[in-house]
Length: 128
Image (cartoon, rainbow, N blue to C red; front, top):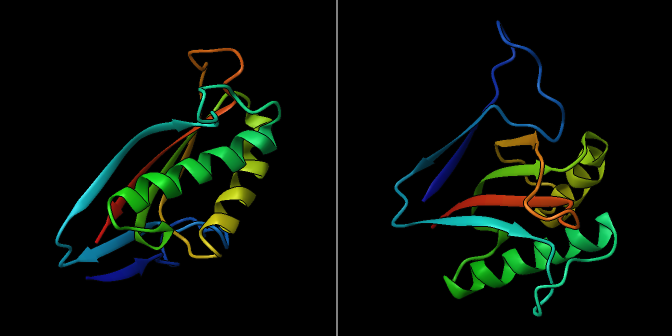
């Protein structure tokens, strides 16, 4: 499998250092579509702070990926659902850290979550 980044600079708005317009995935043998994942512990209890929830989300995602013999290196798309727009920077920083600086296409959407203590939810696509 080969991943090729596409971020044209002419005729389109410039991307930030943590943003990628598109990622081409050539010859994958499989895809993993992961449902929205919240910052809940193994008992289903939400982390108390945004930071706690982001840490739990990425831990949960690593466990889900491992169950498919994948890692964060296989992530090709991230969609973030934020309860408040002020969470964008912390979410960005957590993503950049979790992906070790690797950039993938990402979208953040501000939404009302299903439970008041759910602050952020992430949905990913991975390829191998």
